[in-house]
Image (cartoon, rainbow, N blue to C red; front, side, top):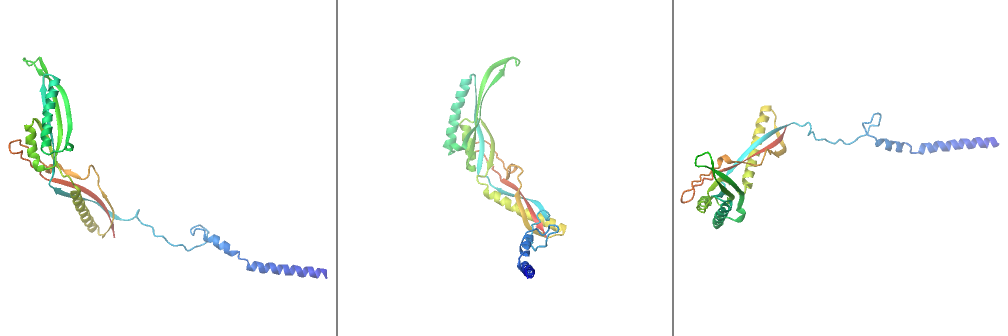
Length: 268
């Protein structure tokens, strides 16, 4: 009787274990763990993942061109270098004479409406000069020279001739370096860039047609910097400074701004 009870108990225990095994969610954790594995791992389960589109910038095709543009305008600012050079037997007298004459010159310039900020000293030098003797071989007396130069900005080009005349009358015996500029070049630069972009597109369309492709969207734009940008063409600017009465005849000419733009277009 005791052996039958033991056998019956063993059978009952086995049945309970079988039922427990059938109800246990053992596969679920394994499935969750496997879903976290990358799909491209060798031997791993195949998992459906979203496909992310990658830009083909490194392999994309395109046409790159450099467009050039220029814009012209009339200068409205003039720059001129004027100065006083004096000579005397002693350095003290040369310096004193130069100071008196330069003071008169500066007062004249300011009297013409030129502001202090538009008058800048560019050179001041004192040097000696040995004169030849009567026979042309021996050395004569030593003289002393003082040179004082200022750069003057004239913000009304029409007044430049009058400024030059009155500067000479005030004692200026050095006048040189006349040049012109535009006070605000923003509009000229913008016009030059717009023309450069249009030129770049025309060049790209021509290349696309020759290559049998269709021009696409703009991929990149950059301004070509090969030096000071934009470039001002000084060959179209000139000044004729004849220091006669009635104001020196001045011809400011025309100022030209040049710029280059590099553009990359996609192709279809």
